[in-house]
View 1 (cartoon, rainbow, N blue to C red):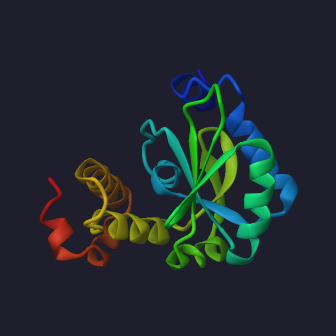
View 2 (cartoon, one colour; view 1 turned 120 degrees about the vertical axis):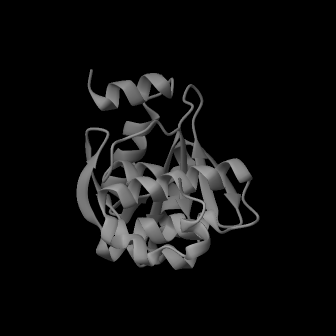
View 3 (spheres, rainbow, N blue to C red; view 1 turned 60 degrees about the vertical axis):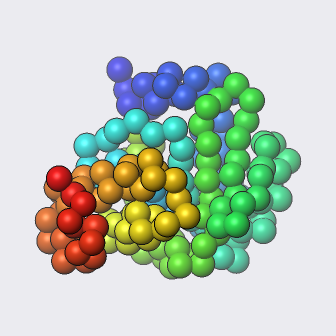
Amino acid sequence: MKSSTYWKAVLVDRANFLERVLELLKTSGVRYCVVGGAGVNAYADPVVTQDLDVVVAAEDIGVLEAELGRHFTVRQFPHSINVSAPDSKLQVQIQTDPRYFEYVHRAEIRDVMDYQLPVAHIEDILQGKIWAAMDADRRQSKRQKDLADIARILEVSPSLRSRVPGELLAKLV
């Protein structure tokens, strides 16, 4: 079974939401890259995730949000735009935190569940996971998942260990 088939089955994506979003990103000309758990999956052994986190070039956010709103349900949050569709458990989360915008310029094409997509550099994904794990406003369960993702990154790139704050390293098993 292909990874993409498994992912779609887990997400109960009867609406072909994933393919539709990826096609919209491609045809709109918006510059973006994958981050978050799916980004970690592009570098480490993949685990199941129910969302696709992306960063869009700052100047392209308005264009993309308008286009997404024509086809899907779009909700604004303080640091993200969340996109969903009926008949799919997949959530697409577009980061609007300006700390992430430069990631797009350093992205490289990598395999994400059988799709060739622009993915943030591993160092950038690690930094995003560090910010998320240290964000006291995030749910504890989310921060634990971020710690697990940091551990997965360090397994494949031990040289990045020096970039992780000691307080987070102390929490890793």
